[in-house]
Image (cartoon, rainbow, N blue to C red; front, side, top):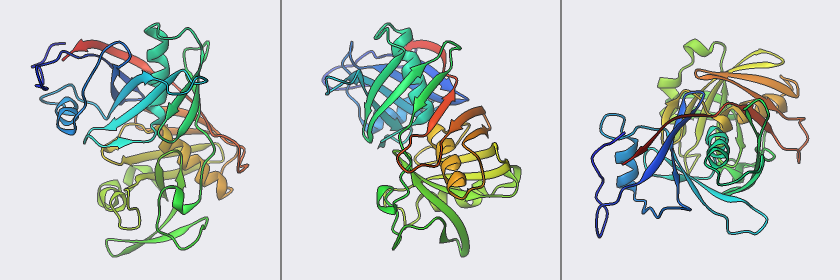
Length: 287
């Protein structure tokens, strides 16, 4: 793929990248170990534009780790240029990328993110399993301006009161239970909850329908990216909140518009959430 070069200073720069997707949540992945790239908000917005650029939900950056016991550093930028702490679908693509590119021969990969170290496993099936860390239900971890931790919160949005769960999976999530995912008020409440004053750093918003004890249907309005086909941390957040509410068991299939993820959590405070799903390379390019 060849598109018009983006000007950088002091001169134009050609950047090699890979386009990847996990359940339709799509990414531009850049190796910043073997090439030097200068990132600006304007440049990322240009690249993310689906008409004039490459088009993606998030930009994933591979860098050298700053810790000896860790293999890589993983950075994530939303389509609007903002840098975020975590992206679960991106983490699977990150693992597939560094392995397929020969940057590592390990199938157990330790990666540092802005929210801590995560572990990625490439399984024999080709799926990628991710240790997403323990869910954090403390409001300050999102941050969420609530007077005290509760299992459920009442949030006034557009003159209506919504009952939500709130959890950090390395990034902030509000989970809104709905009766039918097809008619979920994503368009009405997605942007309003994302930018609600109670979430000073904004929030990802999950609209979740319980099908049974082992199945959740989910749509996610992502912070800085609007509704996407899939959100890995959103799937983990929805499962964790429903598990906290004792509405589901320890192993749940989360169905998103782009496909299914398997999410596991035993409900114990310090136990990690595990997520398994696909990661696919779409094409290689230069810009």
